[in-house]
Length: 164
Image 1 (cartoon, rainbow, N blue to C red):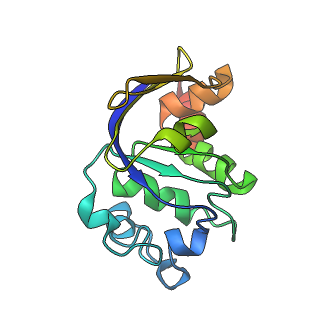
Image 2: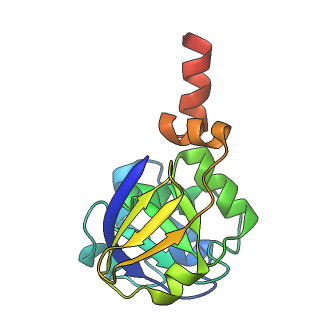
């Protein structure tokens, strides 16, 4: 899997309620969820982003409640990946389950500025900051997680395995 996009920076400890406010949890359509992504963190972030941009965060990304609405809204908004210094464990697993690629790479986050062009080769375990001409090693996904990602999420993987 290969992803390329512009960096959109957020800070440390962005919680799931900032990503996707509780008042919208009754919304289930991706297109509607996308409109409210990051609304309580930065209401204009979605207006500035382009499909395929990479969300770049500090430590504790996804802390807070365990609803999968948060990673689902990030994916629905068009972010291709989240690169962070660290994730809450429940957000990390929810992101995998819905097929949102995530990367932990402290050095890349430290070096990255808003709108830097990032390229991530998950198969080779490389994250490149094209703008700054820097390359970082990342831990490739294990085979079963890679399969979940390639299917677009856990439910799609289960459907594939049941009906193939």
